[in-house]
Length: 405
View (cartoon, rainbow, N blue to C red):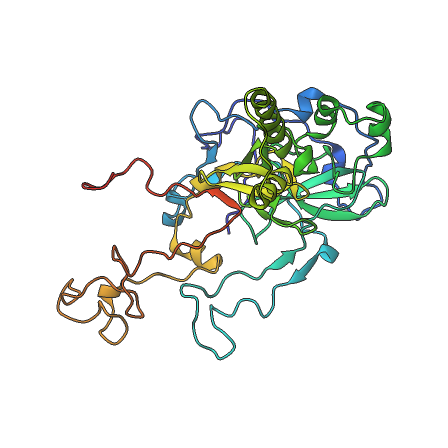
């Protein structure tokens, strides 16, 4: 492991992509252990537009904010890591974790056969129990941002103002220690009802609830908002957009579609007699009213139920995709075994194996189990109709083969 460097006066570290912007001042309570009685508590939150609607941190003039190292060893020469100096340096809360035992079987099933290739080894881990439902109401103070070895995004340790209990949630990009987040999955709180005068005001509701890191039902999120940690079924935890830097966009609501259809019907009432709706049209209308349309990063458009959960913002650690491990041993630490080409194997190990030199023996490309592997009618997927997918994701966008439109 790399040793931490000690900053001495007059010595500059060889970091090429560190931004010159001043670092954000963190609260003193973030550096203390959450279990210690001396940890500071934050009072109730106040509305601050500069914090609530602040965009994710911008990249520096030099491009992506990465950290490089002086090549004192070959494994450090190509090492690239995102700059995440705000992460907690200590251990996680022990009672919110459990050991990963019995899970790392090297990709083998109960009979000992390898069912998932390229798995095995890895460092000893403890699985963090992350709250993907966010059902606890009331404000929660972010104690610190932590690294989770089980996922690419970061997690945040939050403390409830009401129960003083600790829990882990998925951190949004730009979230720091001392921020206050809240969940509205259990309903609109009483003080917010009084602020709106007992009637739902969409503008006031969005201004008070659609903050970065807050968890809301999809029907409360304004159109055009970036969200992550999206659920697929009501009452179940989040399943979509949970990796680093991922997000989805709310593009339409059932109420908006209904109002547009009502105006169109009013314009046609004077010219034509209104026809009764068929059973299929009624089902389609009810489906539109009870679902929210979101667009994923792949271009896929999905219909999600309006009562599903979603978190405002973008998943943390967006520069994770630019990471370079630097050496093969670092992959072994991450439970990744080497990948061997089929033409480099023996004939008994792979259909491409055997022969003299780089040759697969005049065989069409096949998988290790003898199935066609490239560009054939047997490899084309059998499309299954998913009613939740409105527009499928774009495959090979911008590339067209000759003879195809």
